[in-house]
Image 1 (cartoon, rainbow, N blue to C red):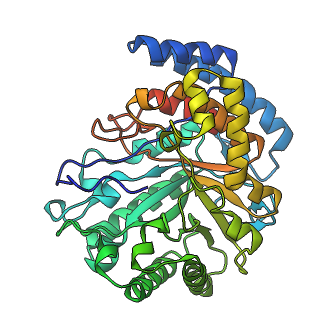
Image 2: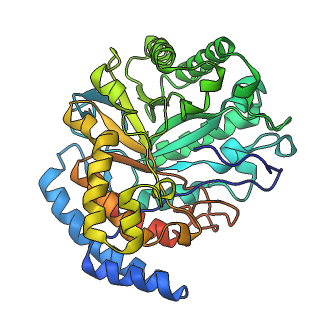
Image 3: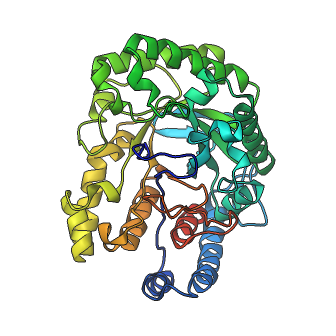
Length: 419
């Protein structure tokens, strides 16, 4: 997801954030209190969620965890890190166990780091630290999507930026959290221009391919890095000549180059157009890319759909049962039908606005949407989980203190721990 860039400054920018969902009648009541009172209720929610998660996880572990898995003190299922692979609609580990990817995106300063900080994302006090990753682990997340600015890495050649990426990967490795490196944005932090807007498509393809090859070579012996989100929201490129056939040809070329370095990398591929268009993913469903270890990636936001889609309108009106049925039908068209077609797919971005008036009854939608992904055993990634900022257009799962969860994060954690 691209941030608003019109008023970007060294210490101020617009970003995005995500949430998660309600799981039981008890938790629902506590969450309603949290939304209406705004004081002193998060600890009540946390206590309720802890009880709920313990009960749910105990049942799940008894039924599904194999002898190769362990349970850590946080109640999260913990597996040895290794590269994954696709098998039909499933993502599996090296022993054949199904792995449902559940996580969130680290975003802010890995996109917006400036020369004032030597392009070092971790030098800012509003980016994650090791404690943040402890919080993710305790919440039940098993991966992060680390969103990279290709301009800082590949064009600017900023060593402290690369060191920061290595450091986060090492932190994740110590906690057995998997990492997907996301080719998220090429934003020139010196000139303030989107790098992709300045160059012809052929130049972009060459530099994109070389950048991905550089990442693949650097981390080929690091199983913590399970793969790459090949290019975030390629819909931003059509004005430079990127149509569907060109996108399909180009992304397949880059994937094959990455797999030539290591065929065990997962490559996450987004459709060309916006996920708000129902037939986006159908092009891949009818003619899948002829390459193994590809996972198709969708972005779906209640924030985008309200008040335009019928399901979102009905959530706003309080017609929850109808809204839930309409949501499942629409999301099935957008990406869930890929799973039934035998193709691996997940939600890589989802969320709600900070201005709750633009997402009425947002907490009900979060609960219902995460329950829907759990029903289909579909992976999900919440954007973002960098520390929450008041100038972000969406709410993070992580509080500004970098160690506790927001109200949105508390709901997200319940689903990360349960399914």
